[in-house]
Image 1 (cartoon, rainbow, N blue to C red):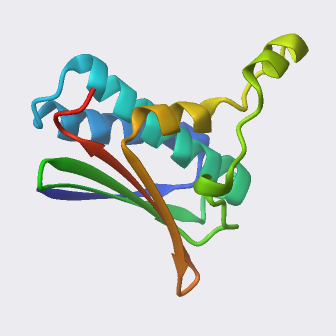
Image 2 (cartoon, rainbow, N blue to C red):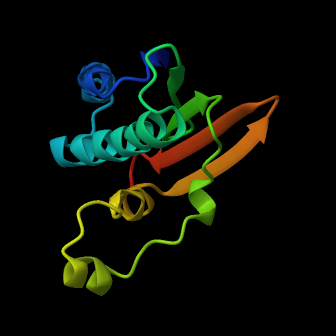
Length: 138
């Protein structure tokens, strides 16, 4: 199965993303907990792109492709904004975040914990973030 969603770069459209992902994931046979984790991870990456790479510009769009293949579900997030390589991101120390009472900064850490594999590439001015989850993993 393969699905696509073009998402305008507006924070209010993240609700559309959640509805889209819920519809797809509920048909895959994953537990509700795993479904919610996957939605959280994909939403985190898309929200960061919308806010930081596209400045919430509704003229810009993100393309989300979702496919199941060989016992895996693959989320491919494609955009042409300022590149952010999730693999190069250095997560802040949790103790520092708590000490500073800082909000935010932990989403990418969650994405890394939820997903089994993360890939990032840029080609032809398109950034592609691929999030992979094995369907039988926890």
